[in-house]
Image (cartoon, rainbow over all chains, first blue to last red; front, side, top):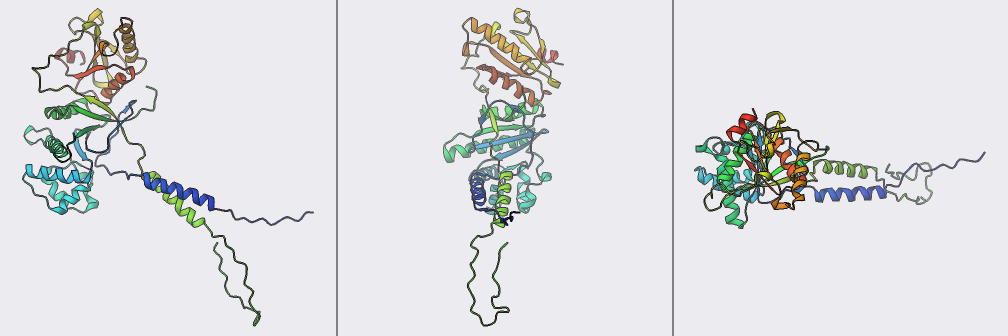
Length: 203
Length: 180
């Protein structure tokens, strides 16, 4: 009987290690962390594949008749907050501005913004503080004010036109979306990006 | 696992210690574990694909006087009415007397419904040499209780069929009555 050769059970892991670190590097470099959303929506599907621009954009999230605003860019957020503050006679301190710069989207009344920004960062994104931006009352149309200030800010600081994206929930009534569009059109913001998901089923 | 050479003079007191041939391979198991853990983390937190969007340009509301409204022939104008619970109707021309008697007809969404009608109309106009900006004009009207998905579906049809002129309009009272 031939003598069995004792083979080593060890595997050379150098190659595996190389590959895994290569992948790791790739993901670290390409990733942009998912931003927490105050109101995640279910997007309607479409076959269009136009990508949404990533800067100079104001995203209006609409869900259950509530409206949330997202502004791209930290410096833009600070500037727009200051402009909003001036309009509503609220002065924001540097800490409050920095706290606001960390919020990618929000749905709080501007008059409650100060108390929201005073809360610890971990609590700021809780749903109970984001009840939606008032837009139905024509005397206190804060959505309109946010859009106006964002447009002014983007034009005066960068000479670029602000882009507006509407991110509506799939089950939202068209009437609500129409109201938002009307508010935008009053300011002659006539071009929007309607955010959609990819249609996977055979339509 | 990592091996350490401990001791060297047990039981063999006084004898010169022969330097043992060292194992140069490093154990990579833990490192690979960690690397894969991190890969998994980054893969799950990253959002690789940016969301898509649909461009929509609305006509300017404020400047009404200096720009004459665009006129379209009744025969090329198709009105799509979107209602509650995915109700869909279309008619040609005017609501009072739809062109060619194509009065408000119920339709369904998707390729066997409204798209067939749209493609048929486009083909008819194409036979007459009317394509692109001269082609079919679609007016999309939705009731307030229609869902946003319905509107996106119809806008998507416009993109699929390649209709160049379409607009979102307000519903008239007559049309609202039909869509009840």
